[in-house]
Image (cartoon, rainbow, N blue to C red):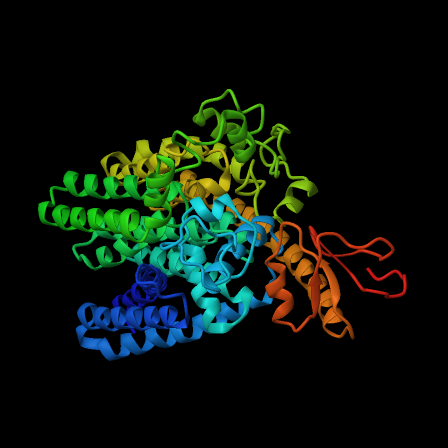
Amino acid sequence: MNRDGFRTCLFLTGSFFIVWPAATLGLSVIGFALGVPLSRWQILSGFVLAAAFLIVGAVKLSPAAAKTVAASSLGLVVVLTPAAAFAAEAFIDTSYDGRAYHQNTLIQMATGWNPVARPLEPDGRSLDYEPLPRSPWTVHFPKSAETTAAAFVKATGRIESGKAFNILLLYSAFALSLYALLGFAGLRLRSALLFASLAALNPVTICTLHSYYVDGQMASLLTGLFALILALWREKGLWPLAVLGPALVLTINTKFPGLGYAFFLSGGLLAGFLILRQGRRLLAAGAVCLLSGIIGFGAVGYNPYITNWKHFGHPLHPAYGPRSFGEEDMKRFLSTPPNLADKNRFEQFFISLTSRSDYVPYPEPTRRKLPFTVTAGEVASFGNTTIRAGGFGPLFGGIVLLLVPFAAVGFFLGGRRSLPHLGFVLLVALTIAVNPQCWWARLTPQAWLLPLIFLFFLSRLKPRRKAVRWGVAVLLVLTVMNLGLVLGSNTVQQTGRTLLLRRKLDRLARADRPILLVTGAFPSTRALLAERGIRFQEVEALPEGLKPHRLADGVLYARPNAPRRHDE
């Protein structure tokens, strides 16, 4: 297969894992509107529609080798999908929000809750679906990731399998980035592979990959969107627009910030076509972006955007509107460190960038550090799902500071050739700046792309700029080292947590009597136990005289009438 055929396969497979969840989401919402509960048919029908898109795309993009390209692409899809489901099952979600919010939401939809017909009833007051505690986040926040995960779980019957889309969207970000980069004339495959891999392996994605947190999916979607925009600006074909639309719909319905990101990404794309004086492509892209916004906000996003607006006076309730959180409640909700509270968003971003990598529990302040210094505590912090300050790795702040003078020299030497790269950097920076909480890494995961874009541009300078190119090599090595620290720490710690929890679950599965269980804020634990055949009786508190054991953070159990012995 030649380079063009390889690029087409990358585009089609990367697009497949955007079209599939988008089609599943659309079919699920149509079903909700018609009173049809979620079932396995949505995920299977979405797969068929995505496969049809892939086959048509192969015929249109590679007419001379359509059968080869389609077969290769479908073969890769068929391999990646079960592999992602297996990898998702290999790790048990032990995160707080993943269990207390996201899993509760998907379980309720999977057991009968209709967020369109009954948008304000997620707490199980109806006997039709799993009775779980009311969560304001379930009621008011976007639910695309939870909806597609619920459909996936309905097909597999395994609660952890819904995380497969975390992995599949990571692959999509990689494939679309590699597709866009290989469009640059003279770029070697190994260089394109390096930059595409770095772009997709966002630390936010890595730290949430094992969990039901949706920030990793947002990071992958944004990376894919930037890759599609780059390809559209540089090439004449309009096929990337067919994927851009579903990607925008998913972005709008993954998190509240996605609405703003989708708006400014669309505006940046259209501004680029305007500058390039491509009127027909401007009109086509404008139509796709407008239609995607209408569908994403008003149709697929009926819950929460329209229901929030209808019942609470603002589509982004409870963050904004007449019945929004108070100032102090917002500070606690956003966990804004006190040393950032009186700073503007640009100061907050810089302080967080140059701070020690840390969760920073409220109301503790961030802690400054010398660039390129690393402590064991910083590395260990990346075993968690959410790092607030210094969230892109312990070396990231130093890399950005060192990159600034190199980038200034590079843009000076590049002259007019550097303007397209500068425009792309400004688009990424704009999407970061529009978020008032841009200091928090997982709320603006696209910040990871900024130094990579600079490094890619500098690596493309003429060979005689050896000093700059040597600097790029050093910075790339530091970037890989930084990513290695994050990936290694997270993999080791999450593997350890999963193995420990599996050992406990295996022991309970062999018990000869039901256990007494206190789930606390994590009633989704019921699904984890039920699919392993573990018998339990849920209670609000364990009776006195029974020895409590910790199953996971916030979840206790006891064996009735069991002898008192050291178990864990």
